[in-house]
Length: 356
Image (tube, rainbow, N blue to C red; front, side, top):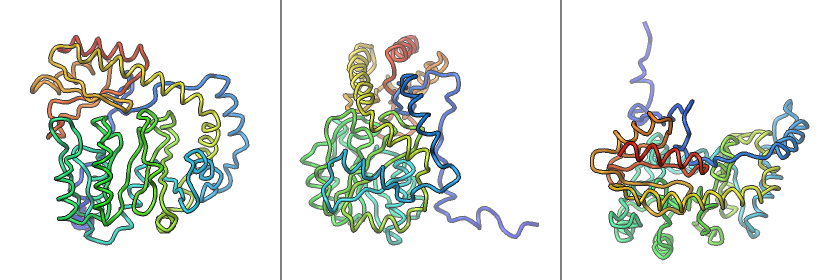
């Protein structure tokens, strides 16, 4: 007979969680995960593979990824005193930030926003608070945010810029007031910055940190995120970062890719162009309301109580998007679609039209 049960072994916070679910996309046009749909030319791939041939797989990687870190600091024109920490995706950085907090700390973000802020906070037994966005324009409810700051005194505030899953940029003046009011850290999550042409990277100082990822740029399979902040803060995060968290293939591949940044600039421009076409096409459909987006995805509202049916009908036609309706609140009746290639986007639009 077992000496323990799962219920007695693990913390109640863990038992209460649901695992982060990733849909099986095999056989579908994949428009559910905000990925860049474009690959590299065969010539560029061959050059990349030649570089990887010399990677010392028998050795541990540089634990601080110094060459790649220096490249990222240079690309972002970060001044002395501002350092960069790399993570296995942004998720690991969020986890490190929250692991560093004292027990019973408070964490604040918006509702809706990136689900991992709450997921990781809850798993660590922290006190997470989500402040609803304004229903009229999906922007920050500044008064409610400032009231929550005063009430809970959060150790960390996460603001996604642009926001996921709504795709919009929050009002800069409102963000600045939140920064001024905060006694803890304010993390500006710029995962979708390549598509937005707006950034807080030049505001990194004191309690403001900016987090980014190369995933949306077109390197999702490499799992690399990074955060810029004052040296004193980054030094503390390094203490709890697991050694060798960025493997040698990722370090070498990202370093190579960033030397060919013009490829991603072209691909990003194509995605933004398609985004504009998709917004127009969606808003021309009866019963559909598509929200303006400065990311590589579009949130749209379907007729009342039809979101799940429409999602399943689109899926049955071979296109996988994201059903955010079950999250409720401002996402009730909503679906989210990633901007793909022109052919993929047309396939989605045809599937949606057939489903209405």
